[in-house]
Amino acid sequence: RWSRVKGRLRTSVGEDVYTSWFARMDLEGVQDESVHLSVPTRFLKSWIQAHYADRVLTCWQAEMPEVHRIDLTVRTAMRSAAPVKEPTAPADQRRIEQANGRPAPELRATATAPVSASHDALGGSPLDPRLTFASFVIGRSNTLAHAAARQVAEGRRGDAVMFNPLYIHAGVGLGKTHLLQAVTWAGNSGNERKVLYLTAEKFMYGFVAALKTQTALAFKEALRGIDVLVIDDLQFLQGKSTQAEFCHTLNALIDAGRQVVIAADRPPSDLESLDDRVRSRLAGGLVVEMGSLGEELRLGILKSRVAAARAHHASFDVPEPVLDYLARTITHNGRDLEGAINRLLAHSKLNAQPVTLEMAEREVRDLIRPQEPKRIKIEDIQRVVARQYNVSRSDLLSSRRTANVVRPRQVAMYLAKTLTLRSLPEIGRRFGGRDHTTVLHAVRKIEALVARDIALSDEVESLKRQLQE
Ligand code: ADP
Ligand code: MG
Image 1 (cartoon, rainbow, N blue to C red):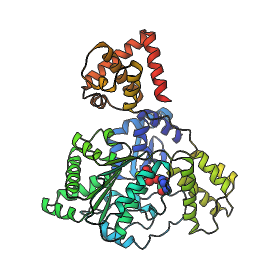
Image 2 (tube, rainbow, N blue to C red; image 1 turned 180 degrees about the vertical axis):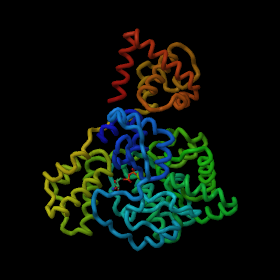
Image 3 (cartoon, rainbow, N blue to C red; image 1 turned 90 degrees about the vertical axis):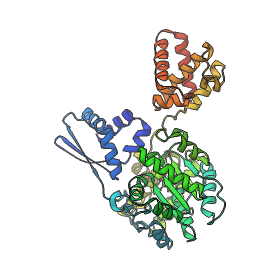
Image 4 (cartoon, rainbow, N blue to C red; image 1 turned 45 degrees about the vertical axis):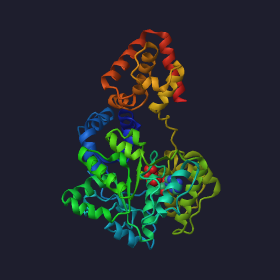
């Protein structure tokens, strides 16, 4: 039933929102008319409560009409699928602790401890000792991102900064956090530069709060000490004042020749809540996308995970055919690959059995998901529509009002509204800075026309097919 509720939620809020906010939500239990759910951070909790409480309740009621209350709490530690102790940190850990101003976690579980734990002025987010360059597998989809990250990590204090900021974007589980933490470990290990790793969440609740209570001078002083600022999951940065603070930090660091590295789940142009100046500053460095993991890369990641596990469990082994099977079927992301190995490890340890293909098929069944539908971009829509109607893309974005441009433009806006999750104001902005009412008008117009004009309706269907291919 929980998975059906999640399915409803996913459909109701859309894939992007679902992965951003609900992927880490767990069911703790159901009692009479209340449902107890948990999330790993206080921030997620307050965000979900403020924006999605009704939606969550509605989805539950669709499955269980008797439910009338949702209790949302913060989990204090992540429950790992495998009851296995993580390897302890390398010798570098002490230095990272100093640089980040707080102890690095010994167990990964502590990485999800409540955000409230620390509000020290420049305390970084916890680092996972396993996420280093040594364990990062290079493949076609991440070669450029990896090379750029290495370059940044290997720079020395006072070096000319090459790409600033370095902005890496990719979907969930494709290695952003791994790469960013690798930069942080590597950068700090020389003990010459100070690298600060922060999640956007931490930036909001710890960093900014601390800065506000200090004088501007102390702020600048603190910043002077940082050579590389690494910010993960920038898409979570919310709120006007936080953004102003972030913009200020970004500018100050870049202008002072300090390196900034950022990861997010989308390109700067799609960070809708950020203002234009920040967006263009972000896009002004090097923007690199990491694509989905190819089969070879997936195999590499699996092997690296097995090798890591074997360092502590020498008897653990995953035969080649099982690795092939996993690499072929778990296509979604690195997190699921990691989960699969953890489960096989746990299962073979607990039952003292060697890993077999049969065991793998049984244990990872739920990790094998159908490919998600392709995410369509507004640029693609503009390109395909322009081609179809034999106008240029800049015509679509221009203010020209001749009939041969107006209709294609309306069709493109209509498609943008129906095929993407973008809001009307965002679509307007991406169509040469139009008002959201203009977009709404276009959408209504085409909706009405499609209902009675068969030729246009066919055209629109054909465009949709082209875009979905
Ligand atoms: P993201 O931050 O993009 O959501 P993560 O960096 O957390 O993704 O990666 C998810 C999991 O997949 C982690 O266990 C990570 O170590 C692993 N992973 C992803 N890409 C790679 C890679 N290229 N090499 C090794 N492990 C990877
Ligand atoms: Mg991440």
